[in-house]
Amino acid sequence: MSAVADVTVFLLLVGAAAGTLVSGVSVEKPAATTSPAADHASTLATSTASVEYDLLVPPSEYGRPPDHATRRQRTSHGTVAGLLGEAAMSGVTVDGERVSSAGTDFESRVAAVTRDRLHSRGHRTSVCVTWTPYPGAPVRGEYRVGDRPPDTVDVRAATVTVPSGMENVSEPAREAADTGGYDGVSTVVARSVVDGLFPPAQSRYALRGDYPSAVLMAARYERMAGLTGTSVAVERQSTVEMNRDLTPALATRLRTDMRSRYDSPADAARAVRVSRVRVTVRTWSP
Image 1 (cartoon, rainbow, N blue to C red):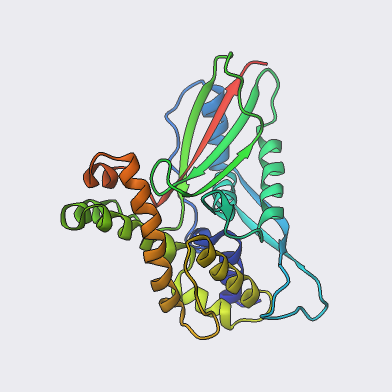
Image 2 (cartoon, rainbow, N blue to C red; image 1 turned 90 degrees about the vertical axis):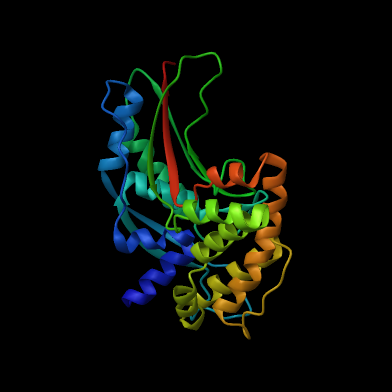
């Protein structure tokens, strides 16, 4: 498989996190401490793993596989924290509805690797992985390994972050708050999210590629359009044009949500955190 095909298939699985496949995963480690949670977080940040998984391909009018199979085996390698971030981005949702289910097997395999790395006696462990453009946003990626800790126990926690693959737009969001209010902030965030989930160049390669790239990318575009209340014409529009249609549709949804959460556009802009995925480890005694 060519390098371009590798990137586009990975893009189809984990969306914006495709950028980390090429550039490597950078991780902010927790401060040194004797906490089991911090030790586990450090393990996730520094240890690496390879995950073999099946890419789930839905039936589509855009193409059929030569052998009519609906799964394609792939391998992903990186730090465990990076793989967890990719799993969260694989399951990005809009108002609780997934944009794509192509990576469900990948997510299951990452969970198994994580449980293996964090297995220890004497305490219980859970990992919560979260990406949101700002806290509580209707578009988000969440992923969990292990049970939630009970409310009645003493819980230790530590967090590392990995790149989401999306552009850091914190400063542009603050500038937009001054010039365009909620409209400006929501548009900046929506553009970053859409271009992160659908980078125009890679998306164009995917749509022009062989099975399953074209099928998966077309399905992602149409699903995102449906979830944001707009439409795209995959066979007629360029990726730039489709992104241009998706951005205001998502911005409208974000603007309504921001108005309900924040007292001012400046407050909304200060909350923007598009470029990072948080990986939080919690430990407690059984």
